[in-house]
Amino acid sequence: MEKRIYYHDTDAGGVVYYGRYLSFLEESRTELLDSTGLTVKALNDRGYLFAVRKCTITYKAPARYGDRIICDAKVLKMTAAQLIFDQTIHNKETGQLLVHAEVALVCLSLDFKPQELPEDLRSKI
Image 1 (cartoon, rainbow, N blue to C red):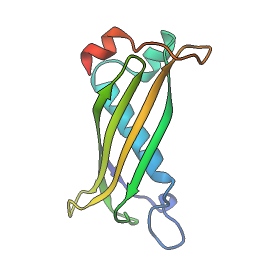
Image 2: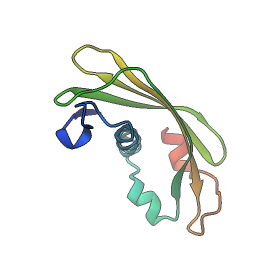
Image 3: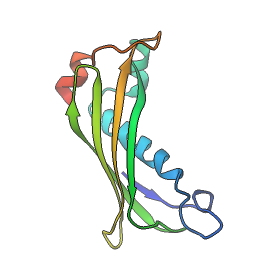
Image 4: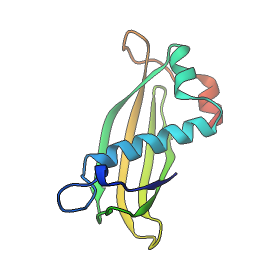
């Protein structure tokens, strides 16, 4: 997923505020799921919710106002109720790695109890 860095993404120093990267990572995971033909909304409508269980981020270099970045998400591992993603954010122009993250999502029922991932999601990822 390509994204442009806007002024509202940055702090007083003109670099991306560290918390904004969480949004970029979320958007990238959503795009990956959507590319399978299973939207997050459709899964929610079927009673599957997803919550971040764990997130480990390593910040390597800053993105700055006006930069274009590439956000990637790949499924690293699946368990019965979890998807673990390997995610990166690179500067589009230079290719420099800006952020590396490992994010674990847990699949929940509507009453927020862990449940198995839907079979169609497992087969498409």
